[in-house]
Length: 403
Image (cartoon, rainbow, N blue to C red):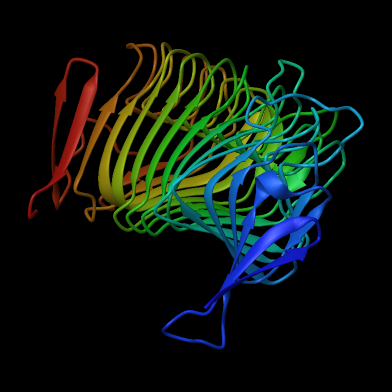
């Protein structure tokens, strides 16, 4: 039996399920809303929001988005300073169908979760997320909002998600002058993240002070395509930003590209710091146009990271001009250890030119100890006990002897 009731200005349909008649499903058609709405546990939101209303998710609620459109044109409403969807605490969103969400103001993302809480996104639907539709937008698509705010943790386990960041903001992570928690991408999530004008696709951003995001972990069977430009890393710390550890593991597929002069995975050029970079599995394709490695730190002495460790996976890394494939950028003298073990499937390391190492330092820079297969200060002239290797022009290929 299906009963229709009026709740909070919405037409709400409640239907008892066959499997568990004590837990009805509540369908909320956004087109019928006439006032702000707080989604409750078990709600299914659908339809196009017809006016500028604040949509929130109650603390601890799990909801479904199915063919939802919230401010799809990205119109900025100065009198409505809120995100497309605001989580009031921990929340889980299951994606079904095709969903488009924009923030309502230049400083507010499409999806926001407050600090010390976690937003989990799953499902088999899609989500197109942006802060708003203007060039003045200074917010992430998914993550923190406005100057000085801190957002919580972001967990992506499913769905096909496209996120595009605003000015001085990451696509997924921090907005201008703000912070966010850990970013975890796993399960079967498929993420396309695009950083705007020098900001990372995934990670921290920029501001008058350091922005910060927590650890970035990509694993499971996730597929990630991250693109940045100018000095911003595709995945990692922003030009005036820091991030925690960056980990790629299991069967993840990661394609990271910087079209200018920031690392693809690691730090941007500028005042940019990340902790350890670890790759233990999956497939990683990373490339940069100039000055910076595909995996490592940006150009100049202000860019720093703690270490790079690669113990598994297939890596194809193409450094920019004057930079190695893996290591530190041009004119960077912040030495840190690089460790590669025989657990890898293969590494194809292409440097930008002969002014840089294949794995190590960039032009006019230095690097820490490079240890490959237990051999310290490893170079293409080294002999390794369990790794075969060869040089083809500017490319160094390493493959275990017992694959």
